[in-house]
Image (cartoon, rainbow, N blue to C red):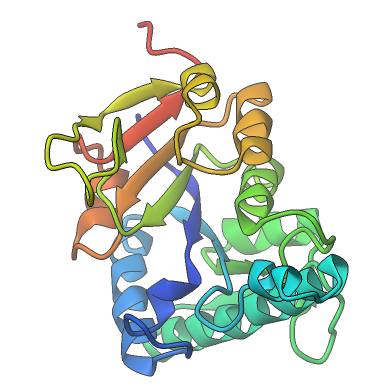
Length: 239
């Protein structure tokens, strides 16, 4: 499928070093170079990045922090990551805009859908931070929501594994990658693609998802240019 506009969902870990809870400038630059490859093709790009390399709200919630407060802390972490990636992209000559669902006008633009669309049409990469702006929703759900709002052709979820497997590939060497799935199969089999809210939102709005390994150099370009990579999730695969 031809991808002219995408929503790229990145984990916070993509901006850090393994095992470290920080933003690493080298990792941010390497990631920016990967994004640059598809930007050169004229692809319009919106990016939602998690905050797990800095803070995981769920951990604080389990430790007794009020869930809404813990989630708000996580939203702020996503803004830090968006600013870091935006800076890395700007340093290699790509114009960006950072928007936030959490209002902080001195740091980022507020998320206004029509303004974001204009940025994309002008060739700017838009970093969509702050989650949905509400607690109890993951950045997966934020990515699904933003993908619909910007009219993306697909939601590309960058992970540490090269797709969805029938078993845990780290525990079972016989695990097989599943190249194609329907949304219903993902939900019925409780496969670890995205959370159920995000999957349901994509199913209802017919938003294709591709899960792929972003830690392998060049994979983002391969997905966008149509190589058989990762796992695609759609309503059906007829025709």
